[in-house]
Image (cartoon, rainbow, N blue to C red; front, side, top):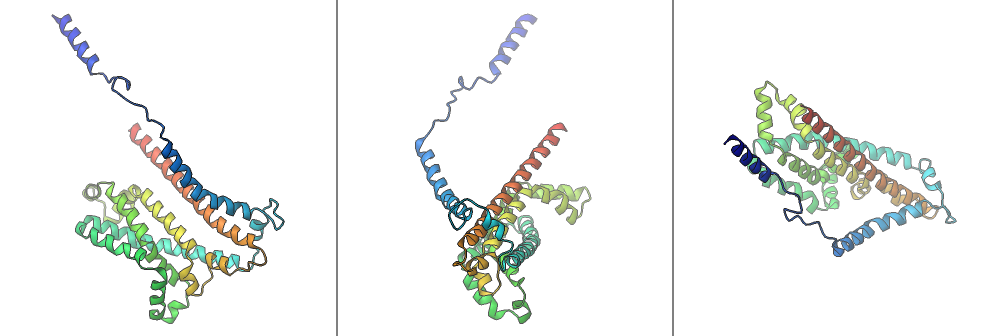
Length: 286
């Protein structure tokens, strides 16, 4: 009887084993030509202008391959000042935007979940309202000391970047059990600052990095507000540079900002993936 019972148990265990994919009716994904066509069209739409710009910037006046445009950028009149101003504005914008949006978004998720719809409506307004309308309303109402400082642009850029930052943080907070994490940290004796620093922010790393990259790209590419506020940033310098002397420099500056932003985004995504893999390995080891 024991052998019969053992045989039945063995048969039941074998029957419960997962069947191969072919036995479960698994079908390999079929190649769809229309998907490949859409991807090729989209890739050509985005990559061909970039290729044309890089090709033109890597040529000299005679049309030969050369790095003269990129080598001449640091010594071009006004480029260093414009680049330094753009980077300072980007750093101030990132700091102010992070200090404002992170606590606000966390507070809305924890204490005011019904206000999320209102926040979504408010944060979408900078996309609806053109930048020229914002700067035209801010400049007459600003005091003289604010208009004489370039960092007025940073606070305006915080407004422009608000839709991207809020939605990035909102998606990151929606992906985690924020209330449980906060209650667990508080029950273990952590204050609000330590909870934010050691519990919430590590889980928002990807969302924070995404928002920062989008903010950086916005600041380095914004033209309307900077030109109306009479400050020479990189986009303003590109338009004001004398095109009759050498148009390759302008294109090289544009490509430098575009490719540089892409490389920065790639580095940040790679760092985030490596950190995520490291965290999963540590969790698996435990």
